[in-house]
Image (tube, rainbow, N blue to C red; front, side, top):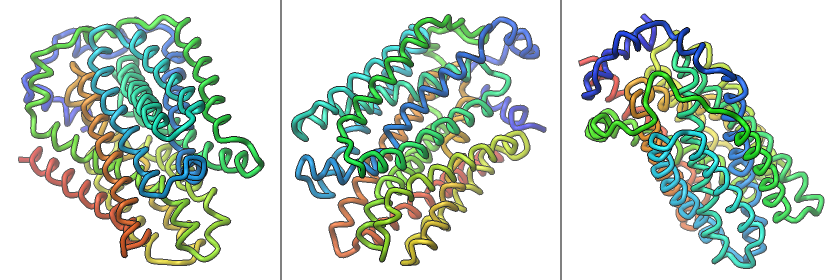
Length: 418
């Protein structure tokens, strides 16, 4: 029995009407009614790729931002709550609107908001003005991630989990590419503001690419929000538990990747040389892992696969803090990236399988939960690092959060079996 077949009955447990006879037909009819899916899918991937360019480079940019605005690590950490607050608002609002007004219009608005945030941050004369610009970046990025994921799920209902994982592969490529390139350019004298403005220019091209495409209405669902289904979704303990798991995951991922360069520079002998490479290595491993997860999606139940990956992440992120040799730490960082690789997409795919008739809003809720974790955990790491724990002790919060993912997903699995 495949994952989709095993999970199918559970969609009726949340108050959603059983599938109609048309919905139970093979998806080839849906495929014929959705022309040019390939180009639209590439556009969805590019949305995540461009968001990841900023996301991956932040860890390298933090010291330069701190120097430009005269900040310490604890103050630099305020960028995460600012960005994540915008992210949460973006995914909730734009996810809802995409169900009501259609994916294309709302995704274009998200791209425009992201572009505006990049421009304002690149031109900000003070940190006080950079914070709201960061919130706009987060809001636009959250909108892009949520609506692009929902659009991909609409376009490929027969392979929803595969394409959601592929979108995360695109994200991983961008996040792996940007830290090394940003470090290379910054060390050769490029102003950090130029990086923000250059990415904004690239976003204009993405906006134009999407604007000239026709986005067909998904044949299996109305664009309008099904409020009855949405109310049931919000009342389901399994949905709330998945939100918690996603929050813990995103917090662990963002906290680990964002502060690794600082940890290498300040806590490892000879670590300065590798501070610009460690995040790239982490995201290369994440991308390889996501490619590897793809073939496993139809062979291993989604939750079981996510639990196994989270267990590996607990081990890797804990052992990365146990050594002082940069080479050994790099190996465990790569292992952690491999293990973290599929968790986000697998949780998102589980949500899409359980709540297909409220995909935009359900995705918005789950991604917003990730935004909460992405605000709290990295900020907490920065605060703990200023205590006697230092960076090594503070980063042990990462395996702790990842262990929480294992516990939550295990409880969901046991509840489903019962």
